[in-house]
Image 1 (spheres, rainbow over the protein chains, first blue to last red):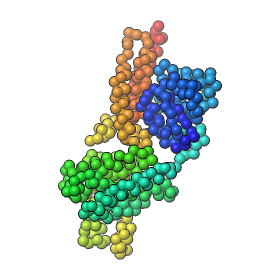
Image 2: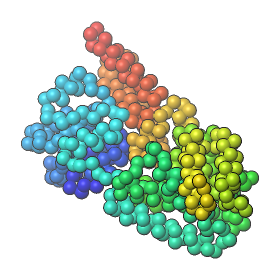
Image 3: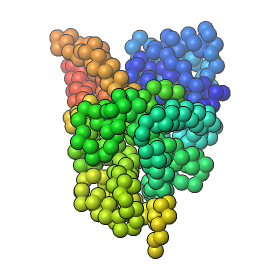
Length: 344
Length: 97
């Protein structure tokens, strides 16, 4: 966030104000006012220094244009003003033309467009996908989770390598995924982070009784309440981190915890989501879990077994999207290499 | 079926709205609850015997704007039409008197 750039959002609608704040506070320091009088008090009485104002044109008692008139009378016309409106009517444009308005912002808000325009006006460069604070805090959160989850795995008879294999293969498959950006250090951090998220997809097992947890996360288990509980509990556990710096990891990891037993055709659990609601990375996570169950547990870890497992999954049409399935097929050489299996 | 899936089935573009809020689905759900209260607290009941429609148009206009931000398309479309009709009616009344 650019702490130096401060923006005042003036809108009587709490909902619209909150949505706009959620867009702006990623990059700017945001102050809110729910009416024109409060905005003027901030600027004229409290002398709050602002870099821009986002002002709703239509407000009760003192509308946006009246606020501008008072600012003009107080020689505060130089502050860039982004006028918020649901519609640019002829009347609004005519009235607004008397004032020094930087831009009109139409509802519904277009996140990227708004940020682009405000950045351009305020001379702010587009921020990196992750700030240093995002990276540092996310790494710390992941390390804390690893410590706790590792301790849990040590205390149980679970196959510790299962989560590690899933995380490792996740990065291999993602590297082949055309929709995942690659190349910059931020992209590398994102790949690492998604791999770690896959590692924790069964973390909800920690919150079940031992006897339940032994069977809960196994794909292909007959299912029922226990099966569903480990997904929901895992997502709830991950979401207990409310830091905005960890938001992206929390979003991805909780989705993987909750949905890694879903299916592309909507016949999975716990929510029966399907199609585009089933995130690509979570589909990969679910696919890898199933692959590992069928491949690693087999006494014959060889190319023939790989082809057999792939064929079994292929026959189960609707398990994941064709694109995600092909990522696994295309990763055969890397998976063979991981298991030291000779493969030509 | 989750709340968002049910809304999607009713024509609400939940994906678009959640994306607008930087992927924060729980914020979106909280705003939907507030929107429900907003509609309840802002009844659009024109006084057909009165000549001043300003407050009613203001309320309808606010609901229209917020419903567009929440991508509640059916309500947005309905209120777009309500705002248009109210404005037309106000204009014709002004011309008459």
